[in-house]
Image (tube, rainbow, N blue to C red; front, side, top):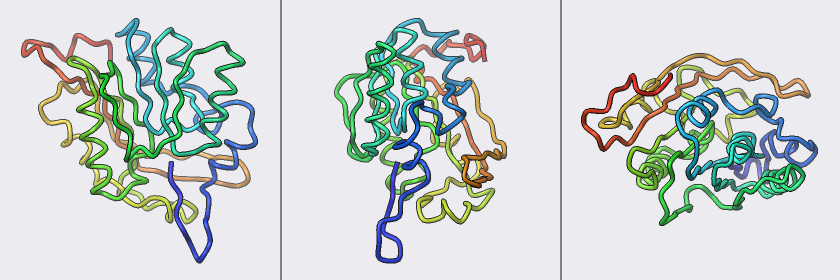
Length: 224
């Protein structure tokens, strides 16, 4: 996740403080994995390679590792990756955790699941388009993408405005997966609190899409 120069100094988003101070991966969703990640990893797949791109302090990556998946987790935040590594060590979990800007991440290996939760809108539009292209290219045949973004249906809160550079247009994420099998797509408004009086309202688009190679594959074959 990203920051930028504001008013002559480096301003940090709220999550950097919680990455540095909290002992658990509870910055988002109280540390619980997202329901879409649970659905895919528990009910569809039983093994494979998972990439969590923009993993933060690791709530989804750690959950995937606890199920026995081979997990690669990438984030630009040193504090987030440091916390993820500390938690993984305490829980005896194996995660390849990498400090890297998601715009620069490439991998020759293919992943059965790629997760990108709540981070692509932090990039400029041309940048997230490139990252989405890379995500799809790094997805194995019949692999799944779980992507959640914020849209312009609701403006960013004042504290998030400097970091929210490329809000998706409502429904735009879904268009990016034309030709894939869509197992879930939804749009809703989310309100959440992050402590210290921080309250946010976000317009959310979510998709679970499969890089289908079998033309006869049914969207009813996954339990969503």
